[in-house]
Length: 300
Image (tube, rainbow, N blue to C red; front, side, top):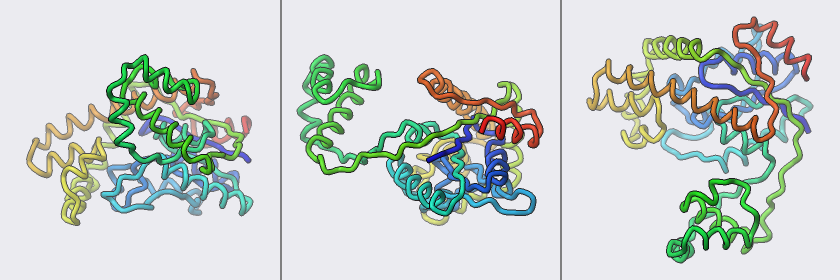
């Protein structure tokens, strides 16, 4: 089983690159974006549908517009839906190209362990809340050696880790197997100042294209301001503007800064992936599309 992954921070043109690569390989795109799953949330989430059209042909894509706005989609559901789509693509003899900027979604597939949406165990949490960090670590180690250092440094994560392992031990029938997937990972990279410029220019274009009206429509269709703010970034600040909490200029200032910070966090996540053993083939975003595809094909 083989998977091509395309990642990178926001505003690097990774979707267009992934679509061109999929076109070359007779493949299909699996989106790994935590907000593009929502219907009616288009401009602010960066659904550039034209990016999927290559040489006049629409490259098939999946896991975009699959749930209603207002629903809280999560990484467990993403992994489940990914596996269904991935199996179907391979069954039809096509290549699968996963593309996105949500590091948690991407790693949930590449790390190859199946996540289970473990329910909250209030009684267990109450009992654990009285224990010291050292006692909690001892308890967790009875199940496994913690694979993540945050399991042992953050009390809430410790308790959640124990809660999960307890659930697994009580439900041995759960299928936690994950298909072994050979993968190659590409990243689109620009210098930080160029990304900042691209983010600012893209924000201006999206505001002019109706991003504010998109938020107004979502509010008029029944979503509360708090529900929209939950989705962060554009939706948080646009909602604050539409509801009169901040001025237009303040909204643009705060949103622009927030997106820059988001792009930085994305790169931090991808660098951490590299340090943990993932090989990412970085491609210069300034190259022509022909040059980018040529480099990728040589590696593939």
